[in-house]
Image 1 (cartoon, helix red, strand yellow):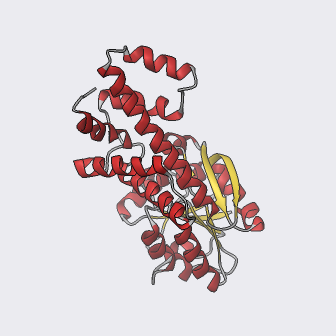
Image 2: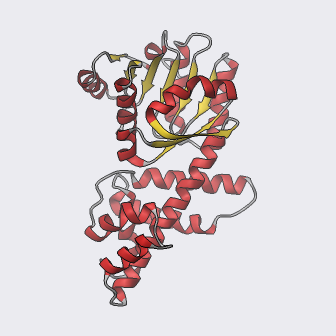
Length: 294
């Protein structure tokens, strides 16, 4: 199967590397051409395209992994976008997190051109992208999903068909809002424990063994305590996802109060200069609020 991969950032480069390792005929494009050339130099048989349009020529599947809806729109629907170079029957798989409304808008634009889009956002951060164990939530037609399953299985361990186009996005942003709220609660718990004189090592050990355990505890407790914000998932990207979740909630006529509170914490974190840092940096906003420091 011939695959074009568009976007070689923190996540995309690792996902594309798994496709190359598993023998797919791979063409890559990246906005910064030097990164694409470097990637191809490290992976045998990978070709570099000068534009998304050129990357899509003659392939079976086009996978995109960029930051937001406007970027997806540009690389798929722009003058040099991938749809301009695609053949009839080419499937488009967007792994970016762009929200329900954008996925359906872009999908409708592809449909007008006789092409099919599946939204397939991922969760798991860069370590799971690297070892090919991402969770991938897919929205789109059953037949198209089955066709691209081998591509998805090269990049992820759990592949979930969430329903029609856009449902993958909806599941993803709700999941990320829960994760972000969990991280915020964790940060608050650490600060409360320290302020009350608890042994933080003991607290973390007990939480990990009991009902307080979570992926966020495993991933973020130590970085928060060390103030080490080496990026696994950027604060600004998490803020975007939480806002997309809240947008979906408003459109559904409901509320998500925990996500609303977390959005404010992440926004403060970004304003403090940590937008490009891992979202464990939200501890900075919490510390500023309480006047304490871990």
